[in-house]
Image (cartoon, rainbow, N blue to C red):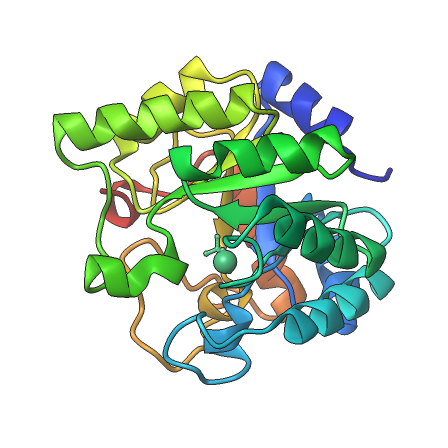
Length: 263
Ligand code: KIV
Ligand code: NA
């Protein structure tokens, strides 16, 4: 059955965990579909893992449109979520809408933007005009040069308060989902309990409504440094299909992430 926003909302209500993976092409999309992945994130992490860039900053709208279209072509069931890349939505509401609309026309069913309170009005603008939005808070890789590195966010009590406030404001603006990257598990848990929309975590502990990993990280393909929150599901699996199935099972069965993958 085709995964829709309604499906995801019901999964949160029923306490059924959502399994998300990044996906960049049609063949993997078909494989992930067969393995039961609920959401395919066409992430701007493709800058790192496909293009060999040092960050996601060089990724263009043309790159995102190409990968979104080929992922959509390989998908029957999973919901296609596409990132708006660096510089494609921060300038104005009109810029955000025009680029989000292009991603939707290429096959995305929801778009993801990085940012907390500063993005609340942009989220409202998009949602009110027919574009579902996933808000990405906590560590925002497009802001890596502001942080001076990839660091856990929301560690102090005041930072955690800001995260909680931002998550609620984004939901109230109409965000359909809130993704949290590299935040303490206790903070992600509190935010998940306070929201009615599903939350997705990466390095955010097990008490969220779903998990995401970068496909090339969880298959052990990416040659770069492995983050604490990554698990290689190829070890113990005999095929790529098996590894993806093991990931889905671990997410749904709450055996991933473990303490060792969390902050
Ligand atoms: O681009 C990406 O892969 C992402 C995930 C890390 C959430 O945004
Ligand atoms: Na991203």
